[in-house]
Length: 213
Image: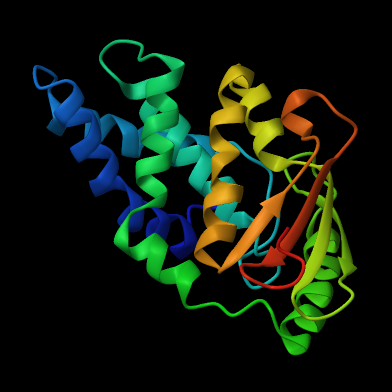
């Protein structure tokens, strides 16, 4: 993939929070050098990937680029951090003001939003046949306050496998629950591709709706 405005925006939105987190955890590290090395590694990871389409053609490019940034910082640390600390880093990044603002501004629980979501899933699926692109099925809800998404392939899983960091995928899965929460919803799932299952089944309903049980 090319290093585009999408990746630049992800870097801008996330790097400061990550740097502050790692700097507080490891005050003896050369944080300035870590930032330089992480950005260099981030660009390298991105440009080594096959194209899965621009953001205009594939909204999930944002997820792949975000995962690439987390893994770039993980690989650039002066010493290997624990998996649990990586998980903390992911969680605190999702709480970054720009990330929260981006998700909180969306209103997914309307009939219009579901129609748009269904069209976008078809568009995203057709953006690329690469293993680094998601393959997704969208199922409309019984009303506008619920819907289901079935993930049959995950770009983050493929990226982690490519970089030999499969053990970290489960920590990045938190972006699903946290992003749905910021959208005003609740996520229920019984299995994920990160666990080696055949798919990830995401049932999403609006908080406080009759489906929120």
